Length: 274
Image 1 (spheres, helix red, strand yellow):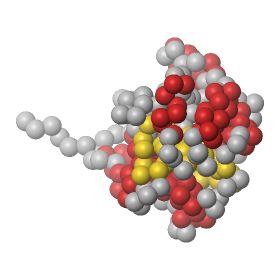
Image 2 (cartoon, helix red, strand yellow):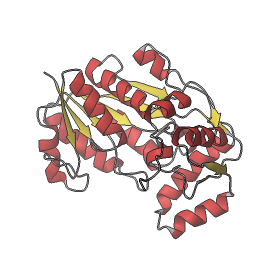
Image 3 (cartoon, helix red, strand yellow):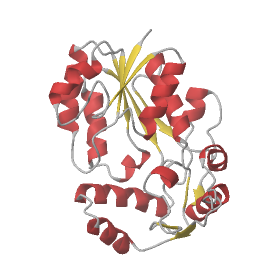
Image 4 (cartoon, helix red, strand yellow):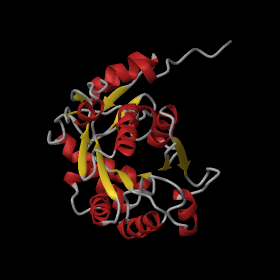
């Protein structure tokens, strides 16, 4: 039984990847600050146990607000010393719109490191509408993208790809772009979400200035503000509307559509009992 360490193992991607690896009869070791075997990017004493005995490691970084590539370089050295052979990095397709940012620097550190590597560059997640940045607030999804479209990726697809890449090794030295099968507007995504939940969900665009002001008012680090706006500007310009074939290449099937994801995973709201 092959062991794989899954950093961020309790997160959106990590918990799905852990389940898929275990179902494929691998020893999946999810590690985070809250797991029995802890892992903390800011506590290097946790690193050796997190990767001990692992054939490969799935890497989710500590965030995109600051450059963590020096930390990644040190971690890769620890992993190499522990006998880890392969690293799969969760990046983002939006890196092309912010080539001087923290995400691009992390990719460079991985490529320069001692391990076999693969980089996954997904589009925005469909699950961002239920678990993250696009969750409706008061029935409204407010993002400065206008009527632009984007091919949202199902995190389940992403996790399946990560499992194959970790276990297979046939994608070493590759950057795999992962997207949904078609680009849809945020308004269409809101309609799908409303149809699946039975609750109102309306998309409204806003200006960059309004969005940045809201992020800063919430205490968002400036590095993340720059990264997020670069990604959103890429969507609004239409430059991020193209689809990528990485899911089909790895899994041998089409990517899951936004509609199919919502039909499978979004839980309808039920009236509270009287």
